[in-house]
Amino acid sequence: MVLLTNATSYVGRLAPSPTGLLHLGHARTFWIAFERAAGGKLWLRDEDLDPQRSRADFATAMREDLRWLGITWQAEVKQSDRLELYRKAMQTLIAAGTVYPCHCSRRDLERATQAPHEEDDEPVYRGTCRPSEPWTLGPGPLPQNYRFRVPDGETIHFTDLHAGPQAFRAGCDAAADFGDFLVWRKDGLPSYQLACIVDDAAMGVTEVVRGRDLLKSTARQILLQRALGLPTPAYFHCDLMRDEAGVRLAKRHDALSLRTLREAGRKPQDVFSMLQLSSEAWTASHST
Image 1: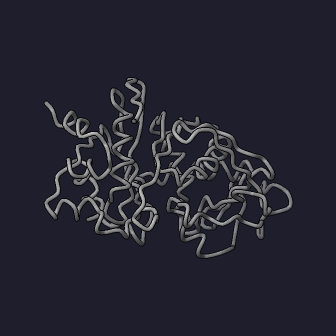
Image 2 (image 1 turned 30 degrees about the horizontal axis):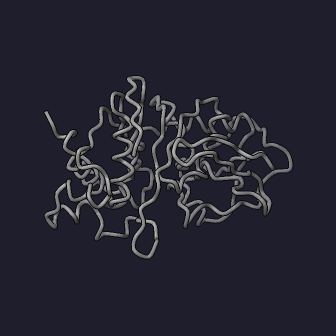
């Protein structure tokens, strides 16, 4: 059962990326976010920073499919319209010496705008480009790749509202859960981690609802929030939906996309049955 907050000061967000069709896993997470925002405010954040994969038709489809399911929101924002905010945050990190230029792994750099998942999380960085001392050259040029310098050996603790107490060790050694992570690409785009925390703060988000595969990202984001003096919201990481083979649902599961189910004649009530969510919740959302 999802515990509803019913607090007028609550601010939540839905954060789909227009890189494919929404599937049942998205539906479950977004419905939980919608329920927990009851009595508060809910944003829709269009995370369209992946220039190779973001498409206008996917952006249209995700809005239509969410509304079909009964999920509504009070305000919208589009990340591609907010690049100046991310640039300002990066200049702050550069001036503080908490980041450094990196010339490694094109594959890692290409993934930096996307939310990492348990199957493709950014590998622990071994510090190839890390300077021996903090990089403190003051405001620097953005047309290059940057990594955030994590505190070696520090364990980041937080208590998730669903998954419970969490602890992840930072550093560039074999014992670390994550190392120095990418925050900026030389093509002028922020990483998922940086864009996410800048937006959450600017939008006044009080609670982040997302999948359990992003627990490690929360540890990274807490470090960025500290470095930028931003508030840390509460976190609620939902259990993941998996297919019959136990693989986390992804956008490649077209047969389980909301659009495919709609075109096959399924109703929102059918989706709720598949998600094992209360049909009463859907009925209440459609009552006038």
